[in-house]
Length: 238
Image (cartoon, helix red, strand yellow):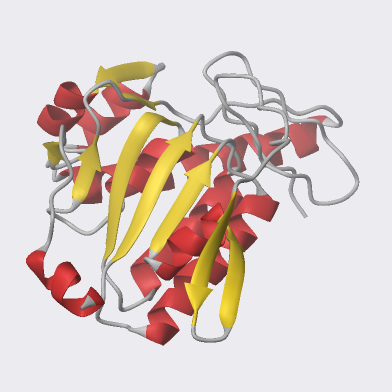
């Protein structure tokens, strides 16, 4: 079993444990749990029904990824993706991202599911998409990867540390290099950059981008200032 890596924009440490550790990290402090989640009340033929706001958005095929990416968040996002695909495999899913990044393994679980399902996944960054958040942002359906004008996007290589015997440290070093290579290849695939050396150079340190710069880099396709209304979506609701 190998230790997991901590990805952050500042020095990150991997605490070596006897069991599989979590790979976590971000460039901001983890936010405290929300103390209040709004409830929406709807009138139906059977009376009133109440939904928490995120469940109501799920009915509109909207998934919100807010805060650090960890195993708990990943399990919920993956379940939502699979549920919406089962409901309608041809209809678009909208993933809203405001995340400082986090667990590499948890992020890859979301990434792989996005690529696995048949439903196209449109991604939109509001606030920030850093580290694993930026990878999930660029992993959206080509042509449907967006950011709002004042969003901040950051890419960087994974970093970490390990303690223990020299042989154990060598194992962890090889693993983090493998993870770095894999992440570089994923960014290359979704940005369309031909030379892997270009991606490696950009990922060497924390690289912050505005929404417009992210378009030029190939991470996203367009900066949105107003919502794009799809006429088909209005017809579906009638």
